[in-house]
Length: 244
Image (cartoon, rainbow, N blue to C red):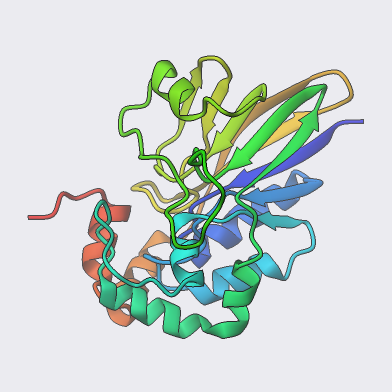
């Protein structure tokens, strides 16, 4: 019997993309769905995205860096981020303590055995140290990933393949393991919600990229009208326009 895992990541408050992706994965009759981190920030509907994912029994959410910021209420502008403190403050205040306590339970990674292969899922490569909420848990982002660079930052992982997010841009690289950046589900220039579909049975596994259209203009209009720095965030993270 073939089983299926749907993988999404970096929804970033984009409810339209999330709903479209979940509808698409439901049509494939996935046995489970994994979200690899960063449910919140940037888009206009962080609360609704968190509530939608938490309401489903077939979804496992992993911790991303923006989710961690929410859990520890860290609203300052990060060194490599374009998300201002005022935006984070607006988002975190809208979410509340109940959702904070639930996000605090998100694991950093999870594994599955599919077709005899060990697959590891995470937001990004983890620092080789005991987890501490006060310490940023992820390795520096590789802006131009190569097999050797990914082998280095994932050196402590023992698996056949690693699925991750964080950078928002898909990649498929074979090094010591297979490295699959799922790519942000909705925080990118194209009006498509993206996902990865893993299919497996007792002896083999495979994956493929899938996508479905969604109403991106509705997201832009709401960001510009309702969120702090919404237009600038849309231009940078969704339209990939360089700041002037």
